[in-house]
Length: 128
Image (cartoon, rainbow, N blue to C red; front, side, top):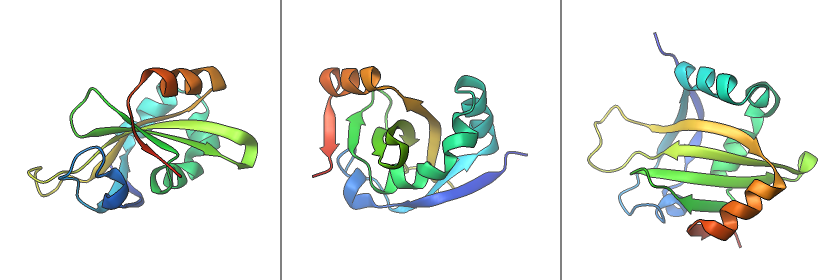
């Protein structure tokens, strides 16, 4: 059984830059995705999971994704100066009623990667 963990609440007003049909609602993380994060980004889950709500609720940047209904969310956490990237599948109008906003992946990124993303990708949202 794939357990679901409630992470935070998504504010539609921020994420409407991705798609106009984004719905407000819970953001979840499944056990299957936790295992993915642990496997692909060792230690990031245990060390930094507590920051995911802050990344999603108060992003520094939202970057366009090549995947439909998906946001690439970037955030620098002042405590420790860590930078994070979250891939977030958004719940939109027309999705099945049981869908929720879902974290696909999460990891810490370095300064070089941060700069490359901001230089080469389409920025949909920038925190003022």
